[in-house]
Image 1 (tube, rainbow, N blue to C red):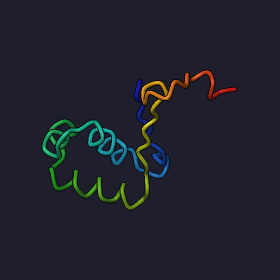
Image 2: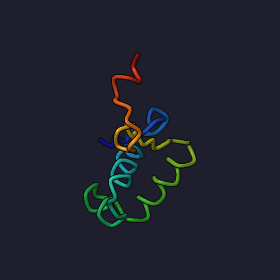
Image 3: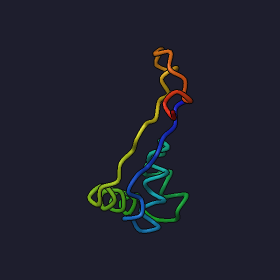
Image 4: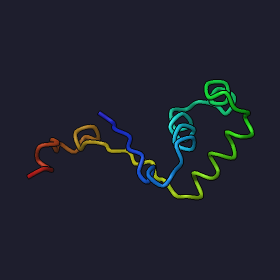
Length: 77
């Protein structure tokens, strides 16, 4: 199972976090703007500020999903 982790969100404002999470979920600027009650240009500004503050999107893919024959439990020991 693929897991997505966002790192560095503590550096972002509450509104920047909202925009980043929705954007990383694949929502468009127009969809985000409508949901948050702000303009699409504000969405773009908030997203650019967040990117400049340096958050990361990390994909965590277990070995068995890649056909490596490694179970998650083996990594923990």
